[in-house]
Image 1 (cartoon, rainbow, N blue to C red):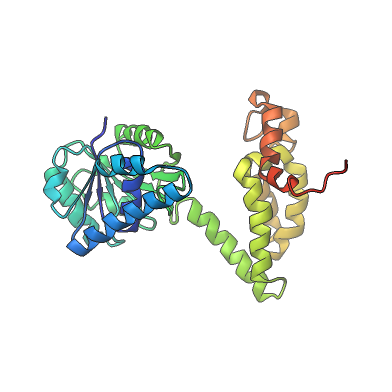
Image 2 (tube, rainbow, N blue to C red; image 1 turned 30 degrees about the horizontal axis):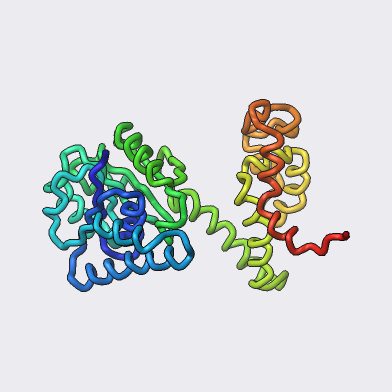
Length: 310
């Protein structure tokens, strides 16, 4: 079992600690000021109070969890730790100082998992004398609630560091995506920026309002892709339909010669994957009933509002 620490007592660090102790695992949080430590303790306690208010935890759970928590300014508390989430400010100087402290006090094979959302993994690797132990484990706020973590390797990341990270994140009930190399924005922020750009463009053109854009995302895209994946949906619908849609949309965004590249991307077969058993997914191994139910599941609550004929 990993001996876990969180270096950083801000919002991300306090939520990360909430998640760890919420799974019955001891956690050391390292801060840099007494005020910061006090804010961290209050934030963790508030996280538990919110869970209790929703009926997701009890006072007994909170008391037991807080007994697993150590919050301190002393980096020597890292002694013996085998896994450290780095959650300090987005600056290379701050992170390098933290990595030196981890190297000084933590176990020699301790995994350093940076929570950075913006710094390239290759840049971080140059800040430590143990680059093979370093990777990115980028969570999303609120960290203890949103399940996704983007694990990003760099050129020198050891396979063992990745496998240990995946084991721990699975133990913490996280959903993990692995990037074999670092790209700006990783995955989620790249998707978000694409939506932001298009949304701003549509508003500038007077097509619609911010409120209606948000409604379209919340009640169509967001609900749909909460139950089935983006590419799983693309694969199920098939190339023919998406190609037709793309031919109507893309000319306003790019040269028409790019349509085939953008839609096909060397992945689609030109047939509906669900029918052909081919595509980005092997549909012969998928359960059609399961897929149909997942496709509908986000909308079941809406049916409860129907006025059913009797």
